[in-house]
Structures are given as C-alpha cells and as structure tokens.
Image (tube, rainbow, N blue to C red; front, side):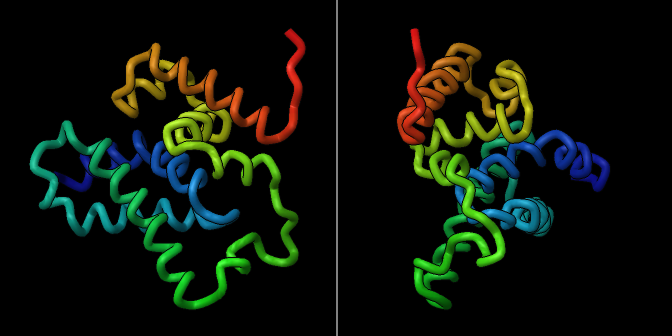
Length: 153
C-alpha cells in the first residue's frame, strides 16, 4: 500500500476510528488514540492481506487500543480515577453512551458525534441501511432511558 493509499484510508476512516474510541475511552483520549491507531496500522500494514478488509481491520485495532488503555490504567492507578481530569466536568451523555451495548454506542457516535448520515455509516461499517436505522433507533431509546428522558408519543 502506498502512502497516498494510506492517506486516503485515513481521510475516509478517521471518523470511524474516532467514534469507536470516543464510545469507549475517557473524555479527551479519543483524539490521541485515533492517531495511535493509524500509526499502528501503518506499522502493521503488511499484515493486511486484502484492502477490502481495511474497515474491519482498522476497527479491530481501535477496539484493541481502547482495551489496552484500560489494561495499562488498571496497573497504574485505581479504576475510580479513570474519569475525566478533576478540572473537567463529567459528561452525563457521554457516560450514558459509553454504557450502551457496543453496537449502539458506535453507531450513535458515528451519527451524533461524527455527524455521519445513516447511509455513510452503513458504507463505513458494512452494515445494511436497515441495520443502521434499527441500531440508531434502539440506541437512542436506550440512551433516553439511561438518561431518564421521557418521550411523549
């Protein structure tokens, strides 16, 4: 893969990686994490056997990077200190989002944090348009429930 090809992949999938990380990591960690994921991908690009698998491959690297973050933190400091820095107010919406099932938090992050449309999410993730709609609907329902927001129907 050439540098140009890789740069194109970065342009296309950076929001996807960021959404995965923001749905898993403490506030402020997703931006640096996105760069780390792409750096690791560049180093391991020879392990990618088929370019069509790049979206799933980069997503797996991002999920592993988030898991590594918590493994390192567990050793370095108590879990209670993982929340935002003392000068940052906790974000109840982000906290609620991070407690949703993985499929919903990633889809909601892509839609509401990264600003992608349903078809763009489907294209990036390989999900069908219908699956994206269902995940957004169910995820929003769970998010509202978690936040105690009542919806009048």
